[in-house]
Length: 134
Image (cartoon, rainbow, N blue to C red; front, side):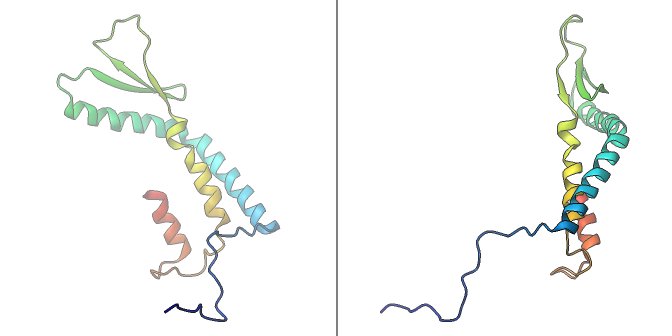
């Protein structure tokens, strides 16, 4: 026996549609600009904090402690005492670790549901705050 499709029922769309009107485009641009300004202002202190925290974790588990992490020039450099003094030091571009904050700020600014409660009862601003820290 074959089952008939129910009538008057629309197929759910598999693709979310993005309605980018003028207000949404302005919110997106303002969120991007605000995130970029925040990033420029706080990226260097964040890099130093991140290098210090990661260095502390490395020191806690490394025996003997020979690795030091230093944030300088937009890069987190790995300095080991067992490297030859003239050898180049490896580094990680720090912007790879935290530039996504700018994109997150732009997406939060685009969120049109900020005043409606979500399925869990949390308002949009509380959901965004929670998302930023997870």
